[in-house]
Image (cartoon, rainbow, N blue to C red; front, side, top):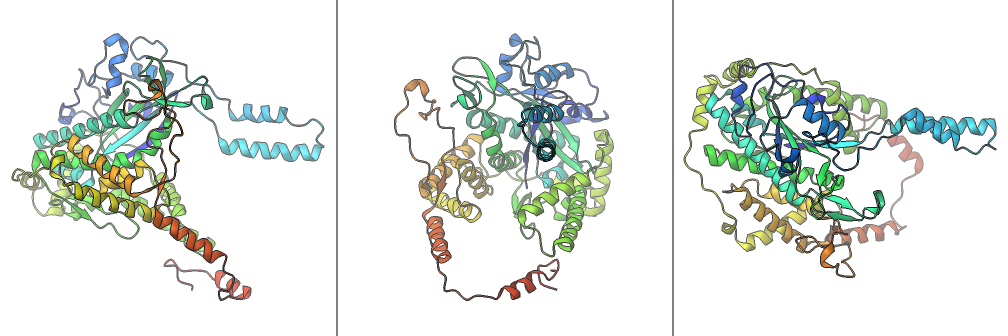
Length: 533
């Protein structure tokens, strides 16, 4: 299950959707304050500030956990300014030309000697190209959505208020720890003589400036505890204190690894608090196993997965249409696009309800599935003995090496080349079944497995030909002119397989099939299972 997703936020009023469901409530809410404080309010809790970069804003008037106001969001995300003082944070967001303006500029640059027919064709081509590109808007931030696994959402939905608060605290703690990990390993900016390609150095930042908004339910009204963490594109550079833009490349590259890490960190928190056990459940063909709390039955998870069922039904319909139109099954990439299309097509309007109404409905539905009172059942699920938790030192070094080799083999089954984030994601998957005492223990073990996987891989990126001066090296000794975790790896096994394919492509003595036979087979319509009709 994907527990972290990311989308780019545009400057302007792109932040407004975060405020539409916020309940009216007085006072600040610390990150650890129970969600049940807003139990009878129609809507979700106000947002709060998050990230160590917050301390640099507002001349020290802001702190992590303070409530976020609409005016502050407008200044920071809408305009790229300090949310308290209104001062610019570095350069203003760039303003891009509209589609008509770009079309007009390109037409003006056409060769005046073109014939009327040639000019007409060029104008038509320009209009198509620019319309397809659409309006470009400045990046104001990144919305990382942190969701708890469906089984945990189901348990949270029907538990008593005290247990709901503890699950909420586990969720918030996992989010805060992963955001802190992002500050250490992901966040960076670019510096250089000029902007764009001139910004050749990837340098460290003092921290991230973020806002966190808790949401309770899906658009279908099912329990879906998740938090939108909006990370500002404005960051303060560590070496000179200037405000610059986040380097977007690692923000995109790390999403899958962050998702795998977050799921494991949240599971650790749940086990530490409640002693629950986790298991991997088969989700069917072409889908990764989903980790779930062992004592939460899959029937209850399915009951609270209405939105997923709507999307799958629409996706199946789109696939059937594709098969009827093209006479063959769509590729994996096409299926992903069709699922995204189905997600948008089945997306209902967000209904604002109080947590009291939602919880009452969820408990009734769960009671029907379980056959007895859902809240009593949840209380029993949480009553467990103290669990055994791992420290980093508990994992033998030979096990680290073996897992590193396994990680390379698993990654190599899906891709021909990989980077550090691919190895980190798989290392988190391989250790998801282990429960650790702290985030630092898990991070250390995952990092060591990724290191072992790098050692077991074949490095394709050539090493630096010269050592960078101290002024151009990061704290870990790496050069700022080489982006962090950008080294490309492969394996000797894959390169050998590639050599075999190339050799066979040059072999011209294989059996042949007449062209007429190929045309006859490929023109026949195919059934949904891929067999010729």
